[in-house]
Image (cartoon, rainbow, N blue to C red):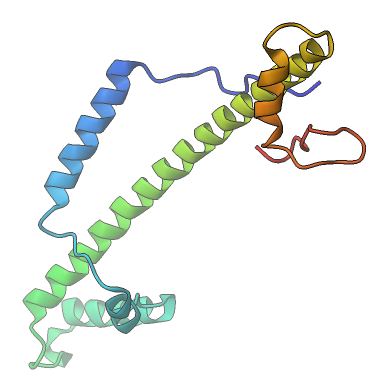
Length: 162
């Protein structure tokens, strides 16, 4: 028998509304700095790799500690603003990625629970259809479309496909 009800924690309507309002506030707060790049722009500008981040960090350190060695052609005030913004964005992205991962994990458990309950209901439907109980044969025929034919247990998919 499969394990079910892996996640019995559910958001209340108030929590969902608070989360939506908070996300809207976050979107509004970040509206001025979020840019919609085209696929070509993302490819062209890309993201600097770890080695290049270390290079940028070293240049930043040299500018802070030995500014007399820095190129006068560089707008160092803008360089520092870009540097600080990049750090701030990375920190926000890390937190958002962590939140997204945790939300996906919770959703996976709810998906699994729904799928197991649906399989249980389908098995019950098949049983009742076999007893000629009214309505169950129609229900079973409607549900059969979701399952491929198998040689051992016709109509029941493997549990690993939620």
